[in-house]
Amino acid sequence: MKMNVLPATLVFASLALSASAHADVADYMKAAGAFCDKLKVCISLEMEKEMGGEVPPQMRGMVEGMADQMCQQYVPEMFEEKFAAHEDIVEKSTECLNEMLDIDCSEFEDLNEPASCKEAESMAKARGLIE
Image 1: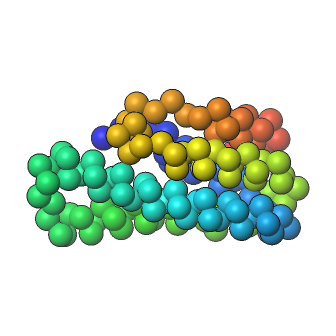
Image 2: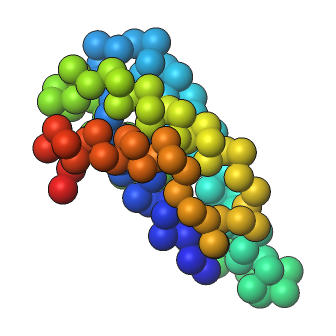
Image 3: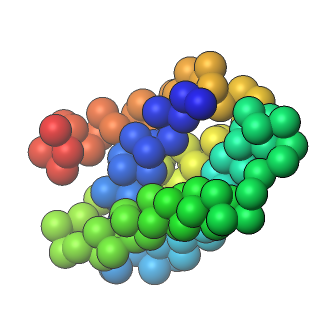
């Protein structure tokens, strides 16, 4: 299962948030929550596909826990003070997540990252927020 674009997208999008951009942050949080929910569904569907539909409850719980951790890993970083002045990146990151929500789970494996995600990444790199 190749979902390598998903963690990168979460990193770039989550680096953008600031506590001072309340409406933008609320929009981002809504999009991030929806994206994480979708990510969990897509992972679950892929796991069922790979295992012929029979996924032991213990394995399902472990994979869901890993997906939860992946989503939660980036949330605390969103309110770091150094991102407070980057509302444009917050907006572009929200756009990125919303575009990712429109992509079918079956397309994630071969996904070309949406332009908005690439733009958010470029903006964050240009400001030294990510490497």
